[in-house]
Image (cartoon, rainbow, N blue to C red; front, side):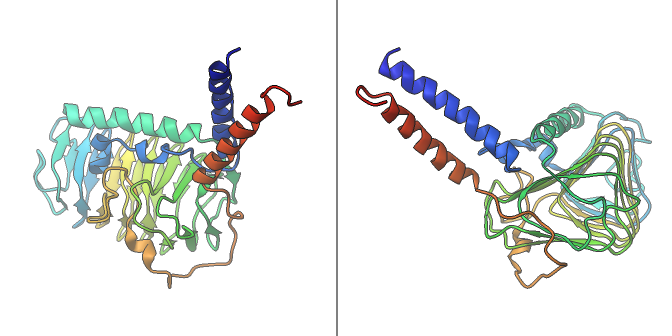
Length: 306
């Protein structure tokens, strides 16, 4: 084997090892997070499949759509739709069963698949209340409620911090529960994703954060705030009651990647006792480690070395 061929072989081996190590540590591989939500689906604040219904003055920052129902019953309770019955409103455009909506649903499926490939990560209790979690991949098992209080997500100052929650069944919150994001900068790769195996229900007055990608349906009860995220349902309905959803966070550069906003810059936001994992190596650290391994491998192959 020539020296060039040997180098290529070693680099390939190390690259595979680095990605594998990142998966084991619960850290998304470099460049993985910022391609989760492609631009079409990322433009939607709410996307349902069978229907989207609203019974209060819900406000959406972003597009509104339904992928599998172009009739007047597809979206009700919003101005600017075929029904045009209000009182809900969206700042973006409305798509009812058109190619934009169906294309967004295809990107939603791809995003859920991508998230699933990140692995189960660390198993957490069914109720996340009281925990402080650093960036990583987590599995959340079924529970009567997955959030009965406050969950704090600490970005540790990383501008590209990513959290992925693999929710094995339903995602359910209790009234008045909240998700606080702290210590995060304005990197375009930052993001918070809830990959839900079935349906999601956020109860009254919940203050939530991040992108909810549900295989079935999503229900937001009265007075829910979903900040810097989206409600995206693949096969079922999205039901809203006097809620506020912001798909992007203007001026922070997160819109395209579906990430978070600078809301986490308020380091005074508290929340619960530490229940998260120990900080794990950043992806760049893993790459530096990989580069070092390449050098060691090449040196070990030089003539005269054992």
